[in-house]
Length: 62
Image (cartoon, rainbow, N blue to C red):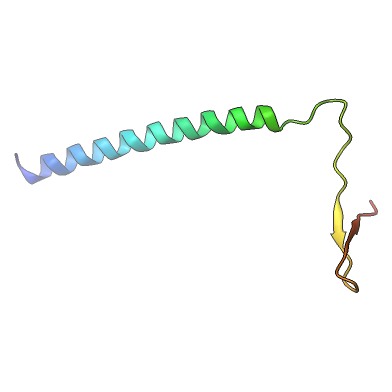
């Protein structure tokens, strides 16, 4: 088999593998996002900021 055919088949195979991996990553991320979404009755998370003097983290005054 000529080397160009082997290289072309390898490139097609690599492209197919990348496409399958990308689709699986999108599927997994969608499943994680469904579980990560906060419930409507949960309060918003408290944002923290670092106090430059003490180095402690305190609730941010918005």
